[in-house]
Image 1 (cartoon, rainbow, N blue to C red):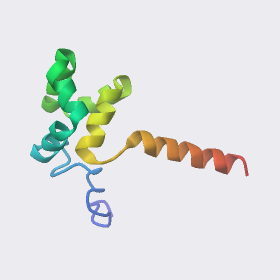
Image 2 (tube, one colour; image 1 turned 30 degrees about the vertical axis):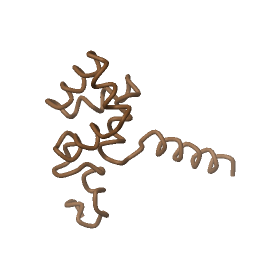
Image 3 (cartoon, helix red, strand yellow; image 1 turned 90 degrees about the horizontal axis):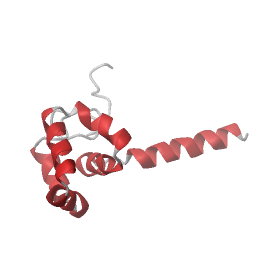
Image 4 (cartoon, rainbow, N blue to C red; image 1 turned 45 degrees about the vertical axis):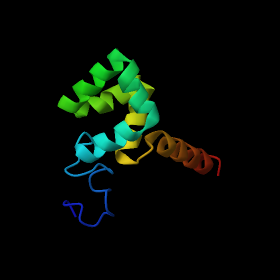
Length: 100
């Protein structure tokens, strides 16, 4: 049970390619192919610096997602997981259960 072998593909690593690092070659290709992210990387030096820091320390991505919504888009592009939509779905479900 602890080895995640019972989970569907990409769920054992939270949708992240390879070893779970979203900044691997596959994740980077997905991010750079996203027009919004490519533009941010090109035009915004501060964003590019923060992005580069995340490449060195992928855990930083989770912290930046809480303060800069662009990094939520980066996570979504790299992993295919839309955490904002998941949170909204969870909240709607909870509200429906509370109203019963």
